Length: 163
Image (cartoon, rainbow, N blue to C red; front, side, top):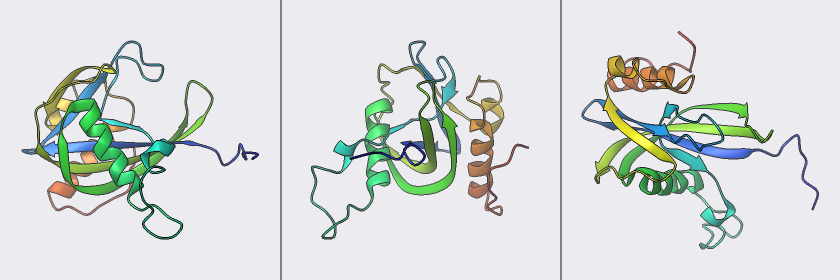
């Protein structure tokens, strides 16, 4: 099978977790290839194992792959369960390996659990939008937090933009 390099991407899903009007942010470890020591939100890459070993939902398809991926990643990275998962925005970048990466940003409510960090992470904080300004966030994450804050306040949903 020949892969069309113009169409091949890593797929990453991230999740802003909301608890008591605060957002969970996490610090990437110094050993991470992309964005070491930067603050972000939990997430991870889609892998074939995320669906291939489970029964198909139709004769040809697996549904809720992204939703199951982010639930698994949140539990693995920070030990939490989430609920009310919703789409926020998307972005692309070329990672340090030169591979195009599509990131699907979601947000969800905290359901239960106590934060337990995976080895890829070195710290965490529950922050308000104002408090988030004082962290060295990956570029664009603050604007995503602003988007979720507006949604939670019942304001009109807008696409991501640098304010």
